[in-house]
Length: 252
Ligand code: SF4
Image (tube, rainbow, N blue to C red; front, side):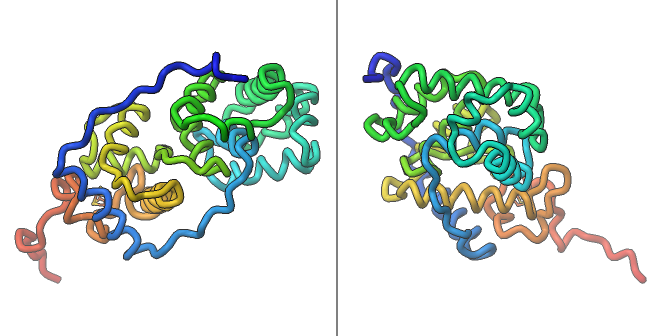
């Protein structure tokens, strides 16, 4: 029913052999340091879409809070949010960044989904290939590759994709895994390094590890490279950390 909405998929070229070992090694090092991340209970594609749309440039605690605030005000049905006055939605999403921009985008997207599919659900996306789903989602205002990846990977759709939030992107670039680039290009390059055996759940775990690392050690302003489990494989860390043997003692 929605075939006409989907453009052709882009198929990236294959990875170089040397790249294929890097992500599994980094994954193992992060797992060894942080342990297994809490497994996710996937939401419906629509709930994940709303969360991801609202959570751009917002801390995780505030993103989690806004879902509780929406439910407290409008109840469990997304139709109530769709049909609510814009000012009410804007008030309900005050905890996230740019509520005045995100509230109208959310209302419009919920209206457009209803208009295109006939009811307010994204469950029908399960019938389509991942590339088609992502291209379809990215037609909504404010939806880019980060949101579309989150919807296909984190939700019950459970497709293979890498969700590159700010933490994940920063760590990837400091490690030198990809040249500096935008989210779409970076994900394309990373996906060529992902072993074929990695499932959607594994990619979710991979993202969680990178996010924890970006929040904990590889922070935006003060990366703690001396304590980092990835120092031996990190381009940025190798450049910035002074080897102990060259340090000069300053005495007592
Ligand atoms: S060595 Fe430093 S820059 Fe590299 S990943 Fe670790 S904390 Fe980040």
